[in-house]
Amino acid sequence: MQRSRKGAKARALIADEMDNPTVVGNRLFKIRYVASISRRKESQEAYAERLGFNPKGYSHWEIGRSPIRIHNAIKLCDQLGGVTLDYIYRGLPNKAPDWDLPLLEAPDRPGFTPRPPLPRIEPKPRPRAALKPRPRAPRRGR
Image (cartoon, rainbow, N blue to C red; front, side, top):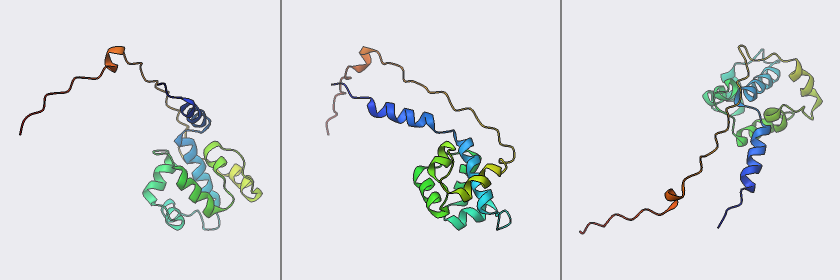
C-alpha cells in the first residue's frame, strides 16, 4: 500500500512561502518598537510580560534563535489588534492603516542581517534489503 504525499507537499509549499526566523524576529522587533512608542521604547522583558509571554522565549523569537509558534503568533495578534499573521510570517501589509505606516518607518533590529534559509535535506531512499523485517531474537526463559 502506498501512502499519499499530498499533505507533505502542501506543508512544504506553505513552509517555502514563510520567511526564516531571523526575518520574522525582525518583524517582531518592529511591532514592539511601534507598540511601545508611547511607553518610551519599552524593554523587551517588560513588553513580553505585559503581553503574557515568557521574556526569555520572546527574546529568542525576536533575535531569530527559535521560530514563533502559530498559537503564540495568534495570541500576539489578538492582543495587539491591528497586526495580522500575514505580516508576521510573510511580511504582507496589515489591514489596519494605523499600523502600516509606522511599521514601514520602524528601524531594523540593531545588527540585523537576514540569515539564508537552511537547505532542504531529502531523505535517502532505503535499499530493498533494509525493508525486510529482521528476525526476532529468541526469548529467554524465566
